[in-house]
Length: 160
Picture (cartoon, one colour):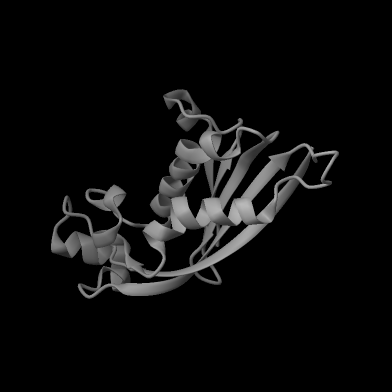
């Protein structure tokens, strides 16, 4: 088995604020990231794909197919957006980068099979770098297939 990691930078903004907390609690928990006007990041998404090299092409996955998948299924939702307002999954979810990584992982799971069923590959890792000091990743421990039990096979790692 071999793995490929591809990087996708995207700018987006967000405000860390929970409607379930008071203004004082939001300020205490999120600090300057609770600014009512929000703030932005130049995020970097890394998607790691693992599997068997195609003996005819010598490739794990044609890069243009992986790029198209990420552009259509993920970046169109997040790039140049206000995550709080423009990404439906965050209507009631605080857009911490932990949650961004989990939502992106779920999008990968949801759409993987239909996009790559002809290849012997699976998505094995989603990493979202927020700043030079903060990165979050979800390890996908099983082939990505669309079912509720697949969502339990994950762990979140923080790189600070």
